[in-house]
Image 1: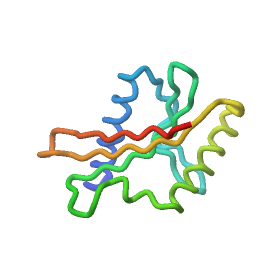
Image 2: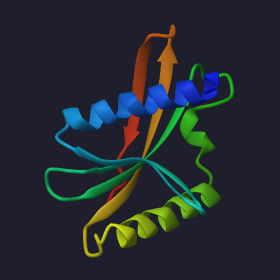
Image 3: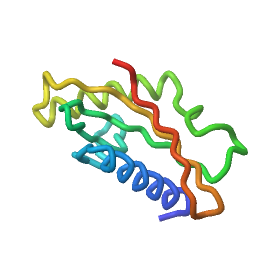
Amino acid sequence: MGSKQKLGARGEEVVARYLVERKYEILDRNWRIKGGELDLVAISEFGVIAFAEVKTRSSLTYGHPLEAITRDKAYRLQRLALAWLAVHHKWGFEYRIDCAAVIVKDGIKFEIDYRAAVL
């Protein structure tokens, strides 16, 4: 695993812990199909499924991590979320697509900017 992949995996782990601390249960990590990958799938204590796209950076040199989520990426996430719901027989569940930016400070401190979609 390269350094970018390790950084991304660390960011996903930090966001998973962030969600668990907020009473979410992690249902899936790095779920893949031909059309792409969902980083984290979690369900809230109220039964809302959150598909979290995680972007991790070690600095803001190339912009804020959430700037990497383009319109095409957002459409792809929507298609992947619907596919996940179908495969896991969760039609009818309320869901949303969230984004999380993780910025690593000094290689050890993680700053999380979590944006839950407004329903």
